[in-house]
Length: 410
Image (tube, rainbow, N blue to C red):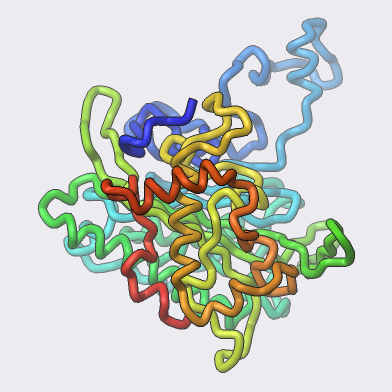
């Protein structure tokens, strides 16, 4: 059954996450040891299946479960939680983060804390390798030497309010190769936009801002560079490093941003309500600033389309999930999120990039463009229209609604 449209909420006992285990690590602030691991083992539900028991090397126990435990390869996604406000999922196959998740703007660690002390500096901070990941699997500083690529932060240093948290952001597990102009212009401006959202929300809430938080999930994408026939696509991207240890260069980068506010607090922890959201995908390119310029509104995408190419669900406790038993039906809150996105796009003028025929040219987001509402039934479109333009306001807002910053050139 679809979730009730009354409100989109999440408690600390729920998994506000990209991958339930990952989000739970961050949201249980005062919980026991985190679920995230960096040694390649699986930290999760069935201890009988995943526990690693000591055995003599080369000798396999008779038990079937023990046999599988000791024969399983390690997983390629390594989770680590450097601090209370940052979680990193690193993919050892392409030596990029799968995603990084950060929390901005809470009373203890966020923007408010910056007023109590001088903001930390990037000065004397150095990029460092994640020694918890095997040398042949991790990203290394010498891979970037003379590569022509910057070491681009996914969770930017400027988002953090203590010196140790800023230092944590310089881990190469939080880094993807980025073209210099992209890193220092378009990507920087998106990061500044997200920080401005966090700061604005705190100012709006004023004295009632305790617990107001902005959560951000950022990651790389590899999308087709061209079409070679009907339902057939071509991938093309570079890699840097020294074979066989190569860092794949992403074709695109995404950010999913949600703003939540507390509505209750009990023994299980605060209960949060979703207030605003947005999903962005930027082409990783160094376009001439005088041509092919993008506005942030040109980069918004449907949440469900991004989930399709990223391979995971964003904030399932807030926006719903297929594991909730909805079958093939898209959760209601995701459909509302998609409808809000389409509504913003439809009213954006001079939106030539978004109105192209959908061919996925290198450096564009064509493969993520909506195809005239395809995939949503007329009955569902009618229901969404009622939600957006009925007597009651939408359940939550898009970050670009009445936000002029979305319409400025990056």
